[in-house]
Length: 371
Ligand code: ABU
Figure 1 (cartoon, helix red, strand yellow):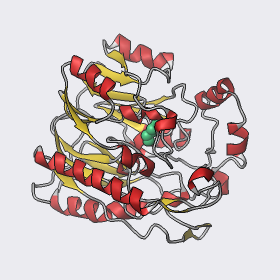
Figure 2 (figure 1 turned 135 degrees about the vertical axis):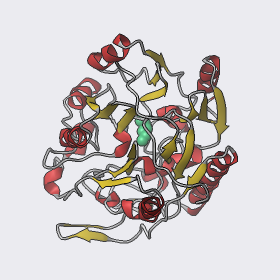
Figure 3 (figure 1 turned 60 degrees about the vertical axis):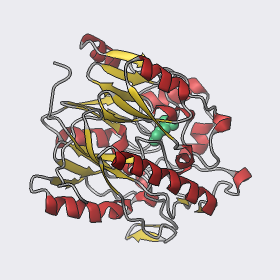
């Protein structure tokens, strides 16, 4: 850590000064657990089986993650990296045993920076229950270096069987699109309301407003906990027409004050759209991804809309996956400098350029963009 640490980030577009970039080493197709559905028979992982991702895939992802870290450092941004655990280990609490962990690639799911606070989310997978430990060396060093940093952790969940609807996946996957969307809109998904649960990547930070997507990993209790935890913010629960909602950052991506990128395939709820339109925000429908589902790397559990999972370096500069040329052209046309980054080899490890990072410091102060 060279530059002095100052934890400060209120949104995803102010000029970036320090960031965490995840690592792929040791990532597992995790052992079965109630919240996770993985079925890749053609790649050696039929449902119920598990194991490390192949070495060649790990090496290819590490190369792209290291390349991205070097690119950011070359632009004067400080980059910190987590410390992987042995993710093949069995873990347990007094109430359950899980045969493997997952990895530490998508840090965005685990940590939420709001101003000078870094909040550890609850997480909703047993395989990710201990993932915060990969970031503890960094959090400890930030805490010692920055007197003003607030270090918080949401209540560690129990994740007993009571937190999950038994038989959810078989029942849900048998439904048609309209029925699935009805369930998404009602947040009647895998998680019960036994305890508050959320992944940090379901939270979209826009100054005084925080938008929390109810999803497969975030329940209404999680939203309520976030709302209570940030009493000075306006905290909104939102849903989209996405049959498998898993983090908001490939669906609703603010680019700068007044402009948000939206995945048009996943309609926003009218109340949310109205809130943006009334406040003169432009909702820009993102160019279709170049990749189709068939083009996704093997073992990838994200959708082609990962193309939208971009990282802003400042209000005029965005990092976009290098093969997503239609999106790059669309954003260049809006006056952005587009920095192409090769990154699809990272997708099977849990996400794109935004998922793979957590903002630690951006310039700027708390502002109200919806006065
Ligand atoms: N975690 C990023 C979500 C990607 C997707 O919506 O497919």
